[in-house]
Length: 105
Image 1: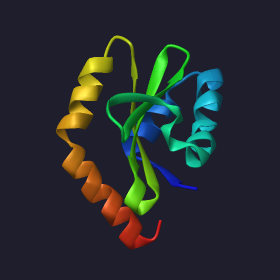
Image 2: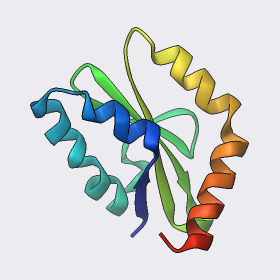
Image 3: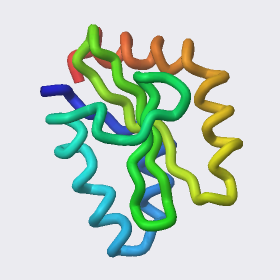
Image 4: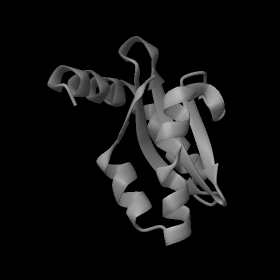
């Protein structure tokens, strides 16, 4: 089992979703904790997405840390810009994952 942690960006974005979509998003951590690779690949094996109706939830899998970071969400309209942002900041997200593990969250 993997630990699943949502970034502040992710948590802020889903808090603005409708109640129905928010409740669906709340089920994602349990699902991907047991099977991290269940989502669709986004260019890398460790970068995945899960869909919640017309929205997408992006996450990064750190096998060596047994950690999954829920990074951000998007609509179809801004999907590519979010993907590009995450890909451009992979090093920063790795540093965040290492920090989370060291702090024992």
